[in-house]
Image (tube, rainbow, N blue to C red; front, side, top):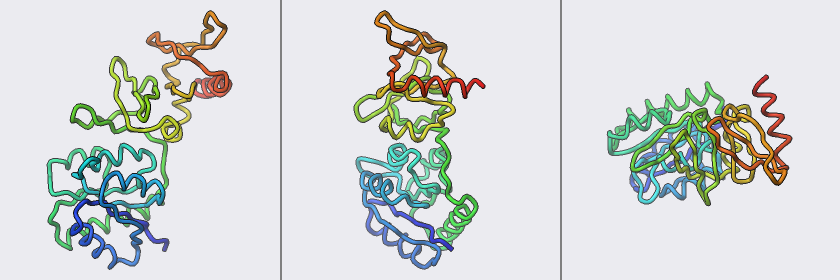
Length: 241
């Protein structure tokens, strides 16, 4: 059987050691990395693409939810949160974590969770589908957006602005990463700084300078780069049958 590639993320050395010791007893598990911070975990998991992650919630600077938000579709297919605080349980399951382990945990509890993770890995084959939910931290809250709710996306330095009706949410993700993550039947890049929800496109218009713009259902007009025009028209035809 192909080993289940696993990453441990926890800022407490003792916690990492405890998890590693238990994982190393299982021949189906291959621990490929240990990370002492959320920031380190983002880089490591983008590079190693693990199948499974045991992820602490509370870490300085970048917590477990920040890690998943930044990774997006690059996040492991199976995530188990490990934390000393039970108040995060609902959030953990809302981001579709497989399970939630409270510290301090006993060996029996951990092994039960690990068995679930292994069974999930065998069933899923760890294939990744297009993102249908976006996790956004806003005003100290974690907001869960369905991708289909987003009208359009605008580049904002190292972030992306998600325009949802009259609200705007900042997501720590690049446009190129979002373009890869989102369903191409639902979203299309129209400019280096804009992605639109195809269902929100009302029409293509020509401005006074002869340049094309995309008009959305709410009247928003967005510049359409020539290099993206043909692809947008093809996607619109495809999405509207």
